[in-house]
Length: 262
Image 1 (cartoon, rainbow, N blue to C red):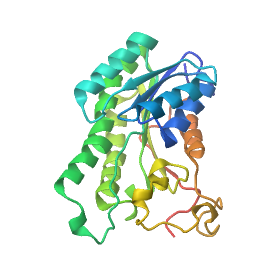
Image 2 (cartoon, helix red, strand yellow; image 1 turned 180 degrees about the vertical axis):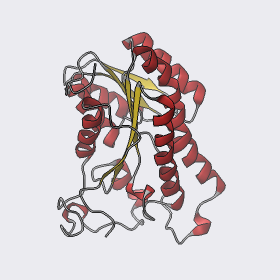
Image 3 (cartoon, rainbow, N blue to C red; image 1 turned 90 degrees about the vertical axis):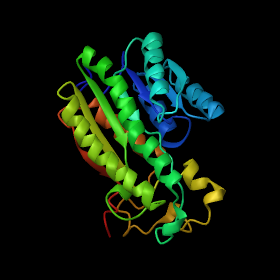
C-alpha cells in the first residue's frame, strides 16, 4: 500500500505535461521517492527526453510516452503502453495545460478556438486521462490522482479569462471524480500561485502580459513565505498527497505561499 509509507518504491506514476516546469520537477521528485515514471509530453520530445534523463539520474526507471491529452484515442493508447511496459499505474498527475495571454479587459482577444483549445486540454484532458487510468487503479485496489489547478480558479486573475474559468472547472471536476472513483482512488487538486522558472513565465512572447518587475522579490506582506513558488515547491506538495493518507479526497488545496486573497 502507498498509505503512510512516504516512499513510492514499486509504484508507477504517470505525469502529463512532464517535459518542463512543474511536470518535470514532479517526475524527478516522485522518481527520487522510488516510483517508476512515465513522462508524458505533447510536442516537446527533446525536453521530455531531458526530463527522462534527469529522472533516471535518481535511479528510477523511466519511459517517455507521447500523447495529446485532448485526444482520447491517444490517451487510451498511452495508458495501454504504460501498463504494457511498467505493469501498473498507481499515481496520475494531471499537469498538462495550455493558455493564451489576454488581458481580462480585452474581451475580443479570446476567439472561440481559444476557448475550445483550453477546455479540450485543461478540462476534458484531465477527465480523459483520469478515465483511462481508473480501471487500472480500481483493479489494483488503490490509486492517487492529483490535478494541477491554479489560484486563478478561485479569484479573477491569471493569463486570461478562459484559462481562469477552465481551472475553476478543474476544481469541480476534481470533486466529481473523487465521488465517482472512490473509495479506491483518491482525487485532489492543487492551486499554485505565482511560480517562477517555468516556460510560461520566461517566454518572451508573453512579455507584454502584466507581471511583477522582479517576481523573485515579492513583498513578504503579499506572499507569506516571502517569495513565489518554484516548480520544486509544487512537486513537494504533490508528493505529500501521494505518499500520505488516502483519507484526503475531493480537496482543493491552495498552494500559494500564504498570499491569500489580499
